[in-house]
Image (tube, rainbow, N blue to C red; front, top):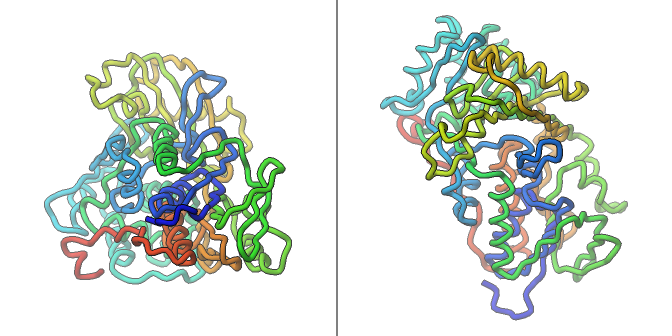
Length: 470
């Protein structure tokens, strides 16, 4: 901790995961934090709010994590919400008509731990499983650099069947990377596969059991408890770097801080950069980024339509179902029978084909598909619904984009970048966002000459046979 009573001050622009991670880490090192957030709540793209049309508190989009996300897990432990995450070691795939297949671990060592359940999948034939197994071996055990080609090209080169692409690679990678296979870098796809295969625990999926903003409000409490301040409805308008401080303009008022962390989406950063020669290289890098949308469809039924908490849906527009009325039950609840209805959230990643559709069209499409997968929904009445389109949900992980992801340090010694689009070594995930915040905090403390712990957590160690290849 810094012992000087004149604490160095840090402005954090952005109250998403990247900004919160940076703020919590720096607050622990004794910096006085002021976090500016344009919305009236924390969480950024991982937030919740009371929807005016339904009167319900909803998440803007369902967010999940995996055990392999070591920095996100550490962040939840830091702010004291690790007990608000429900962990699952099974993943259910459902075909139209309702046939379900479950992937789970076996006693076999990694990377063979899911092989028995995979080999029993009825929705893949023997040839599909053979070519997928060969591809997983190549992605897991050999380096897959970004060659400028897409993962779909890679699949065709490695003779993946259409069924393997549509029923295996698309459900896994489009959901993980929020982009279509023909726009995903090979290196990103390989990272998703490799990280999920490194140990049986790596693929355990965590789902928040409380609304997202309730989760991240604890980060706000953490910052305030260490002398920091959170200002809502306070978007950063501009900043001016000076040799001895940084001038930040918010609500037409200039304030001075020792340091500034820009924890904003890449398109917002472009709008606040000064028109100077120092900003030109970063501004040029930002022109190479594109967004990919995610759509969340919230439906409330008058009865239970499934006893599953979540599932992957095959062959249709909807990719995932999350049974929110089950997931949001408190740990002390007796079970799903406590609720007479079903509240579900359906997720469509890389949802470009839905952006121009109306809410009515999307809900009708979703209802038709839900009733294909879950027979009980055919007799259920829809009580209310809403659609949330996150048009700029993530950056597109296109081939070659890594060359343009900037480091956390900038041309200005007192200004740092955080965000899942920066150079974190991870794609656009909550883990990537937290890593970026911790990397920005590490860079800032080095510049300030403050001795501090390394904030980045070690990667999950490989186990079983995977230890031979790490």
